[in-house]
Image (cartoon, rainbow, N blue to C red):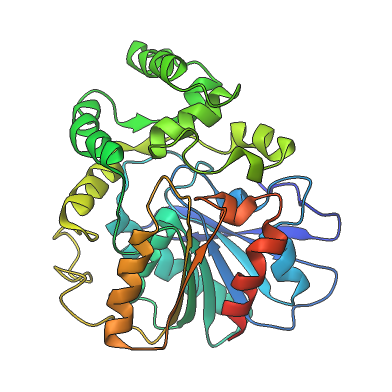
Length: 348
């Protein structure tokens, strides 16, 4: 389904493609009134959202800013997207099957020699995993927000993901913030919503409160309310849905080890991502909101240290004061506070 463009002068075309395992995915190609003067930029969303997460209503979005700067903008709906039928995915599948196919599709449609990327959260971790494994040789610049290879979370969040999640995973395949808006039939899911109503009181939006329960340890977890507009707060209600416990279980193992842990299902991925140099020439700019309550800024600091060890002085780390997790990308003042850093990183 083609989303409504967020500005009258922008057009969106949906370009279908197949992941390496045959799964049907798609790209949203966003264009302005004038042809792009720069190369393609691929935007990759996080878990349990969709490509549209970069396009909140009623404000200048990151997509608007990139199109205005002349970039050829593509948004990837990978297997974690709520626009697709829910599946019990993990990061390995996305790294091996989704992102390389998305990049190849962009290159084929544009005729470009390389692609740049702006990636967020689990779109970031799976994309960076793919890159350091050598599966994205045509991606020369990656701007990663929130977390890349080293998940670091609060003590309370560790308890949730390592103690609570394994028990939930035995009872149900998915967790969904949308349950707060569309009450589920399943009594266990209703019990989760009831628990969130009792324990989260940060705002009147039950979906916002469900998001905090699902993804972090804050009240709220993914943004500061003062950083997002009322229109964006309302819009969020329809932008979050199913996340599989298969992902949360993998993230729990990764938190325990201190870096992303892969399975042994894919020979394309190294047994340990930190035991060898990154198999890529891409330049990384790592962003982290100083107030991030989903993944602490230390997550990006550790990935930066890993990258800088192998190529000193080549990569960049930016801790953004006053911001958290997703408000870096759709805050009401992000066009002033964070987009310039992203544009600068892409232009280097």
